[in-house]
Length: 117
Image (cartoon, rainbow, N blue to C red; front, side, top):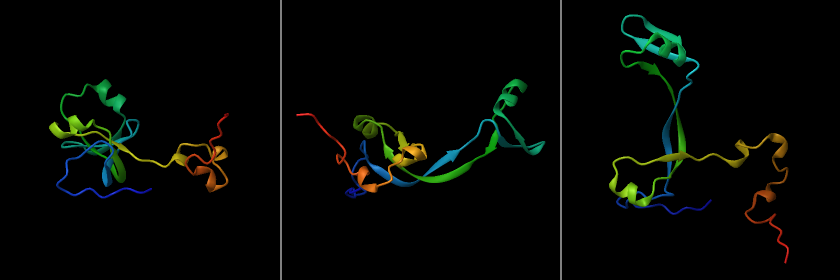
């Protein structure tokens, strides 16, 4: 892939790509929470809801650096204080291993497109 670097003083725009953005990874089925009176414990979100959450919870979450692309509209990115990002994943991470092409040439854009004339 070929992308041009954007100067730091340019505004953030839709389609800009950022590397090493921290993405939190949280499982609601198995959470490590820390409370001041009980210390660390493992629980599920459903259990916390059933118990009636009355105060904020401190949870331990994993953080992984990812490459992300800006999906906010340019007008929103220019005037808003927050922007939306989406992690960039390789296509083969979504395919079943049996569906992956055995020959990397098949991944070239347009190489397998056949049109009836």
